Image (cartoon, rainbow, N blue to C red):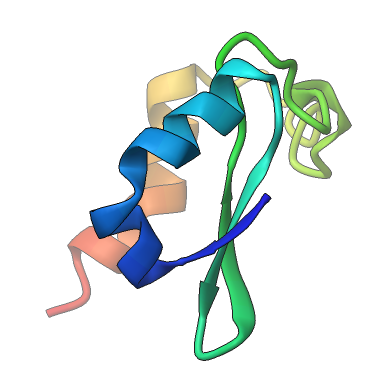
Amino acid sequence: MQTSVVDLRYRMKDVLKALTRRERVQILYHGRIKGEIIPAGEPAAVPVTAHPFCGMYCDDVRPVNAVMAELRKGRYRAL
């Protein structure tokens, strides 16, 4: 089902019925797809272990807290 942002406001009942029928609802904004509502209980499209970061630090012997502190360093200590 495709719906606009205005339809989400005024026709939410129809959107919920589509989700009950296990349909994906695409949200359109100015005719372009902005997002998608997926019915609950449907598995994620890609498993987390398929992410490129998974296993990147498997050979690192440092504690997790030290690794996370290093990764977050630029964001929290930028000033």
